Image 1 (spheres, one colour):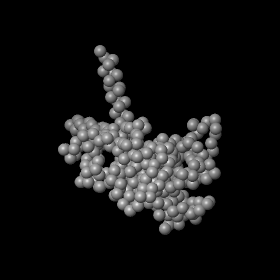
Image 2 (tube, chains in turn yellow, purple):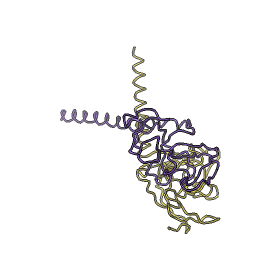
Image 3 (spheres, one colour):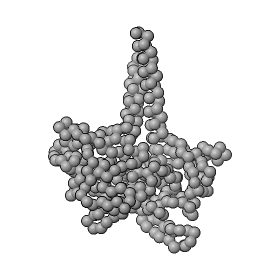
Image 4 (cartoon, helix red, strand yellow):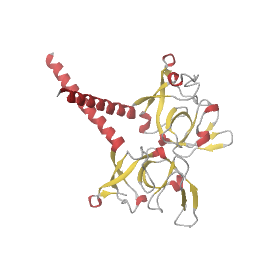
Length: 168
Length: 160
């Protein structure tokens, strides 16, 4: 008679923990791994092909910015890919609505409610240069700190790239 | 001293129940069903101009069960603080033909919806601001599927 009630209690505990952690990761902050070298040297400065998943950086993503979608130039954000909603990318905001951003080919005007994102490692980064401005509604959070590996624990500072953006 | 300890314990218990309840509320609201107030003329005659309260479910867009014809709640690409209620007209890979301004001209344009996007339009083509203005909508902006109207009471029922 004892076993079912024990199981029931364990199930209830698991459910409660799951609900609370889901809420915290939705509303406050979550920890995500960074894949790939598109943001090097800020994240994953050297990628080791053998130990890729172990040496990946883990970063803290805060969600408070989602209450009003206010961002500034140089913020590092997590967003859903516009082409595939199951993929998430981490990139740096280069341009905000109303800005003019210079690319190799021409100058792009960023429409209302969108932003221009680029990786720090422009050589191997899939970003706004290939899919254009990203709607701010796809943004899922802002990266504030690096948490793992231990010797690289630090906060992520805002960096605005060289003179490429002019406000309208 | 003992009295204070028992009061503190009681308060902790109450607080944890409230926190758990709020968490459950958030998860239900974000992942299962939420209610939403729809205002404006863009979905006439399906939804009234005066403001209907509809129920939105957040499951089918996560498992990819949306198809053309479904009413969806989406985050506006022009202002991320606003949400819109529109109808999906075409999914990725479909060809859509639309006229930019049905009041003035009959000229129409046609395009193929790109990968990972959907084409949404209001039911009232004359006043709706939708994909005809801002182009195909990334699938990630879809928040949920509108499936039921609960207010006003005389039009209570499922929406299709």
